Amino acid sequence: MVYELKFADIGEGVHEGEILEWHVAIGDVVKVEQLLLEVNTEKVNAEITSPVSGTVDSLEFDVGDIVKVGQVLIKIDEGNGKLAETKKPQPKKDVEAEKDDSLFTPAAPFQRITQITKVANVVNERVLAPTEVRRRAREANVDLKTLVGSGP
Image (tube, rainbow, N blue to C red; front, side):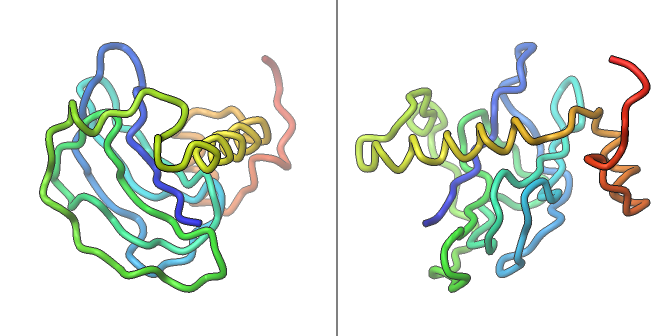
C-alpha cells in the first residue's frame, strides 16, 4: 500500500510553503517519526516527519519549490519493501483542483479511512515536544519517549 503524505494546513492563514531541504531520497527506508523534509512558511520553518514506516517511492517536489496545502509531498510504500515505479517530480497542477478536504477519495474510500486511523494511532503515541527539542534530541541520539517531563 502506498501512503501519500500531503502538506497539511498548519493554521494561522498559512496556505503555502517552500521546500528547504529533503532528508530522504527515493529508495530510502524510513521509520515512523523520521525527519523527511523541512518546509519554510511565512510564519515558521516546519520539520515534517514520517507518519508511517516504509520505502520512499517518490518525492513530488524539488528543493525550492512552492507547495500548497493539500498537495502530495512524498509517497511511501508501506508494503513488502518492493518499490513501485519511481517517478520524478511532476509539473505543478492547479491547487484548487488537487485540494482534497474530504475524509476519503471516490476511488478508494476505505483505503483513505485506514490511513487516517494509522495516523491517529501514531499521533497518540507521539511525544509532545517543540521542533527544536526534537532536532536536538535526534542529534544527540536521545529517545524522547524515555524522558520524564518536569512539568506540564
